[in-house]
Length: 247
Length: 228
Image (tube, rainbow over all chains, first blue to last red; front, side, top):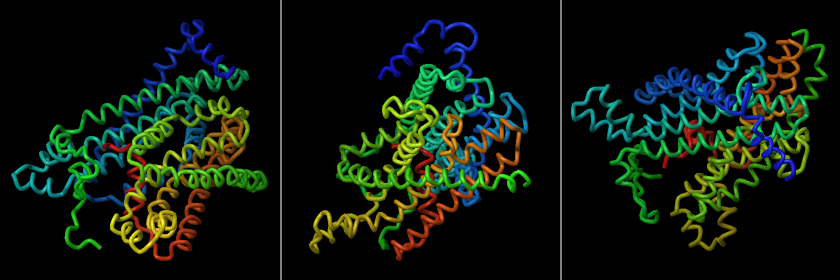
């Protein structure tokens, strides 16, 4: 417990709150690199994932990619890029983008795919164009799952951005590696606590967003009473119904 | 390639160390999670709390967890057991969720039939619910196998030997072949353990056929935090 007190003392030490490499500066760096990566990765993954989810084409490919990338060790990718590109922000940014792709891709296609096919057919039957089907039906209904994908991607990025400090002088991870070098456990632990708090805060923020993006109509039809929950799936998690021939 | 031939001993030793770190973590997280998942399935009131805790655990960055754990356990950060505990915790965060789903997916009719023909609650769990939940549990385990093996490399930056040491050492000494060897071996180890789990699954569940759909659903479920 003594260690914890020292770390907390380190966090609240006024000397760590001003000047170059202060806590606020590191937090801003951490957020800046995370946001940059999230925007780049989203621009790549969300359109592809939405295409896969809407058309149903290339689903196996998307699954293989997101499954295969999971096995790729983060640190290996970071060090390999760090070695070939050199010390600096470029290598971590590329590595982080690669790691953020699978959850974004999975969220986007699972989100669009989760929409009940009957709902999509109904939209089409009413005369909606493909663009409207995507924009007015599939996207709003699948939004909670898409945001869920963005949420895991962001957490992954924030966590790995810490590790990125191993090859770049950037972000909260710097405290951990500086403390490691000088055998200053209070600084390491203080840095770790800040990283954990940041990650939990971001996770909480996304949890709120995820609730807010549920369309009002879907929210209204959700059943509270779990015992009397209908066997039919809700609109958001719809699956083709196999009524009558259940095995 | 030259680097690899002259360092085969080191690479072999690190591969074994890596196995010794990840296999206990994988087994421990499975053994601990299945009962927790069953509780989350059986007692509705505990479900929200347990799954929320798992979500929080999963949100904690691994490097930070590795450094913060010794405060609770009293071990040194360089102690391999510290890494095993961290890996186990992440495994639990993933499998509890799939385990709860797996037990939910057992048809209520089947459960009632089992009770009707005289199964005791314990007998029903071992004889009916667990085998029927098996395939989904295995798909959760496979996700954990792959992520644990890959995550174990992180320990290298704080001084826990594993295949990850090839990354840190390769970076410091500027040997690309060393890092590539590490990446290839880590992925090969993950795939090898994955196959081994499928083989054991076939032995224990002769009726089971690996299904891409179950695996995909599990992956999706792990990728996104439940929207509901």
